[in-house]
Length: 118
Image (cartoon, rainbow, N blue to C red; front, top):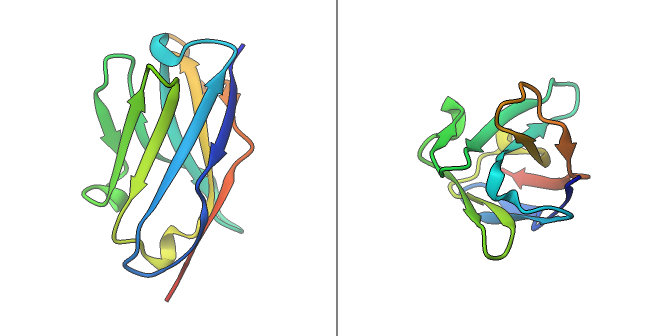
């Protein structure tokens, strides 16, 4: 079992930056694939950034070049550095984890709100 707790959300002006953190407990994230998802009001949840157990990141096109996902295995924490934020990045952001051979993410945090004002 993995427990995930996000932090670092807030309100920022367009062009600004935020760094989200996701602290894990109950199990080491070393052997998990992890990712960040977001959901805006009235929209479906979308995957934003992912990183495998060997540290290979991938991003949705809309955040490529602006967001960076990273993991600190010593701190058992996942991060999402978000730069050049846009109003359309406004959403609830969730971190998630799964064993890499499983299709669906099955461990989720409670979410942290990111609001980007224009």
